[in-house]
Image (tube, rainbow, N blue to C red):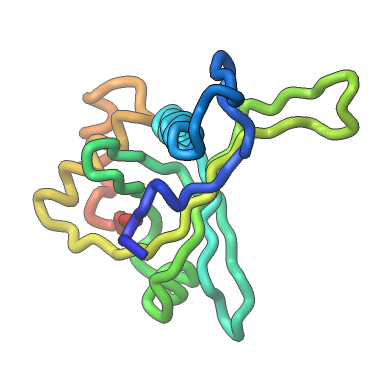
Length: 165
């Protein structure tokens, strides 16, 4: 499997609004799914990262993330040491899930939630200049101003570990 193969995304096996599924080929439907899922990843703020934990137990944790459309990579941050880092050093295979747009319909017995599930390999980034550039882009997604983002990077940027899927 490629490092991050977006054709392997499976999610919400419903056609996005405004698309007539009877007139589309299977490939066109898959392209619609991928497009819709990439939009969810781009505007979403949180996802769930699942790693292989100790003794084969899965470990899943919510994380803030940045999706880079050009490189088709997902970035998130965390501490340089801890359970998540140890688990990733033992096995880089991960599952990343984003979800949202919950709606409840009167005729349905349960809420409808859109989601995208991605399987891939997660790598710890080295902390060099290119990593700091990704960190700044990441911060700009969550901070209201560039000045606040830069202040936080100056204060604690060296203690942050960036991860890439």
